[in-house]
Length: 443
Image 1 (cartoon, rainbow, N blue to C red):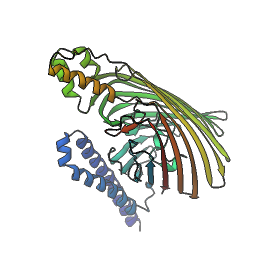
Image 2 (image 1 turned 180 degrees about the vertical axis):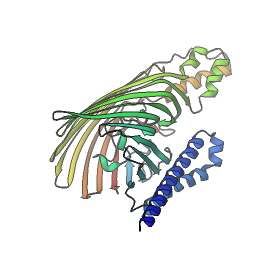
Image 3 (image 1 turned 135 degrees about the vertical axis):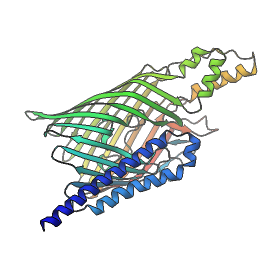
Image 4 (image 1 turned 90 degrees about the vertical axis):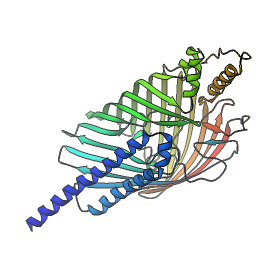
């Protein structure tokens, strides 16, 4: 009997490591895939989809195989989100004037493996229906916890900038269908590869959580129709969170010492400007400088009501992005299993004016450069937007919830305001209404 028990433990131990190794290998394939040229990406698109499917199957197979193994735990989450935007002139967060379930719907599976009393490993695979976001390994890291208060993580991790940054894909964890985009958009770097240290303690009735992190970031960002390839060698930050009863106070800072970015389709224009002797204009379109952000938030969660607010400021030495300031205020009231909530969110972004000194009427080539610079200037995001969101959430099961909400979007005409305006609709006034429903599930 003892021999069979030891044999079973040895097999599950080896297979558990094989599962994590397989997921790590798929993560490497996805990393290689993100560094390919667009032509190579198109050729290997089917291979990437196969890797994403295999990633999900790997965790699912492991969960079935080791259901009785106490050393490994499996969990998951899913959300089916439908949305409709009441204008034919633009898109907002991928939604237009047709009902769509492909923008925010997703499926995630997570494995947490306990190596011993000090070390553990976690992997999460995400399958996303949004064509602007890659599916695959969302995080993969090893944890060292020498005691209950101190914890170190190394690997691919979530950037803990905002209150819901760690769980933004788990819709069950927050009241909205769509978290306020003025803060929870792609401006902040959602994940990084590196390490962090967390310390938890208590002072009387106040508990505190201190976290510091350091790593690198390399991914694509997309906002208002603009695609940007961003690489950061040194991304760092810290978080302080205080809790007293149902009250929480949170502050966070994030810094990127050197942000290098390539904007889709801009390289030929930069080369043309440099060749024509307009180095000063070309420098404005070369993104190679620092970015920092500061956040403060407060919330209260009670049995009958909740209230929360977050404010964020992003500052940059990059010529194209001077400053972004965003905030939201939200409150809700519980009626049995139903939560009724309202949220006001706002963002204000300022851009440095880039003076176009290229003379026109001298030659066709210079005219072409002049108008190309003007078009590029007008395409950079100026995301000034006010939003009022009214919603309801019904927790009809302990692990499932139905949500419905309507958001009134009030942007500034002439700005992007998070909209992607369609060709020929330049007169769009940046005002629209977004309707959304969602089914949230954790398992």
